[in-house]
Amino acid sequence: MNPSVFVDVDEAVTLGVETNLAWSPRAGFGALSLLQVHWQIARRFRVQVGGGVDVRGGQVGALVVSRFILE
Image 1 (cartoon, rainbow, N blue to C red):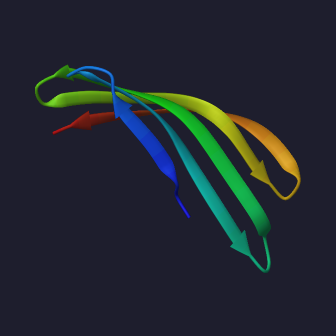
Image 2: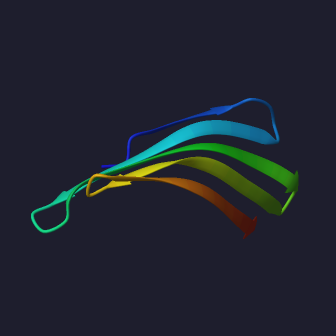
Image 3: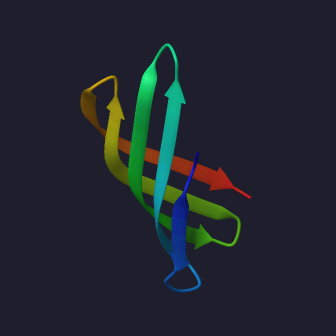
């Protein structure tokens, strides 16, 4: 399941929270929550950065992510 909420702050900036929830008989429960900023730098270039928490098998870890998109 991937419940997420995003809001356009202005024409070039979007803020959001992305959550991923998973369960399997072998791996058990997993959850990931990321706060994100999407920034439209140029008409055809976007940067997404975020940070959050990953919980799997009773272990908790921190995440930092980035994505560069050429549209």
